[in-house]
Length: 173
Image (tube, rainbow, N blue to C red; front, side, top):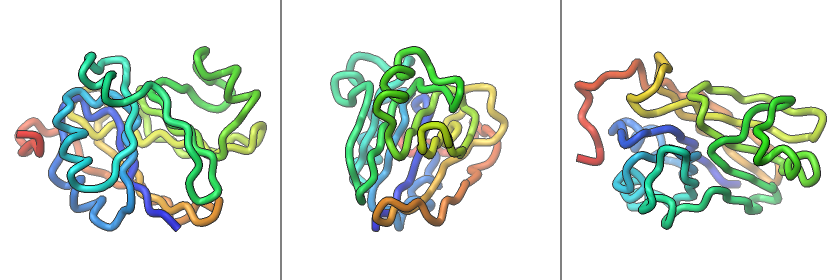
């Protein structure tokens, strides 16, 4: 059994409350648009981290984190990328691979729209944690926490960090 904290679209902002919400997870997964390498440095110092770069990330982040992470954990094939789309609307760069070799769990960010949905056509759970940063159109900043237990997804929790608030202290300062 492994407990995961899922975050995306921080855009250089890391709310201190992330550390409280992820205190009991085994790993943190970041689905791109990190925004500042200090974000992943702080997360990595806290818990083991798997991260991918997003479309706004600079060369420092792109050298440190790949475009895709595909791995097996708890008998579960996981694919994390930043721009992935949604069931029946997958992004062109992932469409062929996801239909020819679907993972059990597909995670992406980019849209800033939190979604957890099952794609029955390819037997794949899709997750997008929304956006945890202060940049973008989203009104509420969100995270996801969940457990993978021998191929089963359990205890999926949506965590609301609240509305964008530029007065909050930033964990990367």
